[in-house]
Length: 214
Image (cartoon, rainbow, N blue to C red):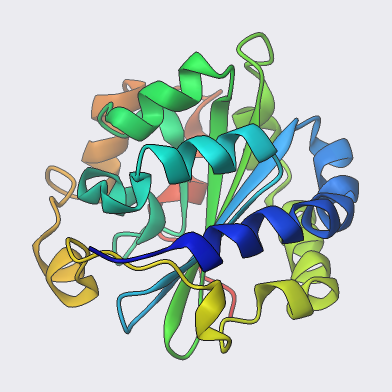
């Protein structure tokens, strides 16, 4: 069994700086927090979060072994944004809800040997966060670009002590075998959101085939 003690100690020690650097983006979009996961092609991950209690719970319940949550961290080939409510419920999603972490909007970036996952989330009451992100994608990406530059020293994954691992987690098999959306992406969105109305057309369009910034 993998020993991730040092990795989670790093996640906890980085929490203060991580939260401080994320705060302009959180304030802009009315989010209460940010979850970050860098999935490296060697099957290890850098995991950071603005909520200390959540990091401790993630460690205690060994959520790093929750293979069912892989779709959240590793995007489908033609999806570079996603909404948390679009995914099937799993133990991590249920734990999020139990702690009042809800209405997540996800942004993905790809580097040379990794995927990055950014999830802005808020309280149960603030249902408007996903729509606000969708209607301001250019602004959101600018904030993420700025955050990545300033937080580079935190997000650096070259120090192996920062990385969590799992014997159940294999990047290649997860990426190749994970469940595909039914039909094309637009059909997938129709199933989740219903047929696109004028109000929802922008949502369908931005999630259909956006360019993923590097």
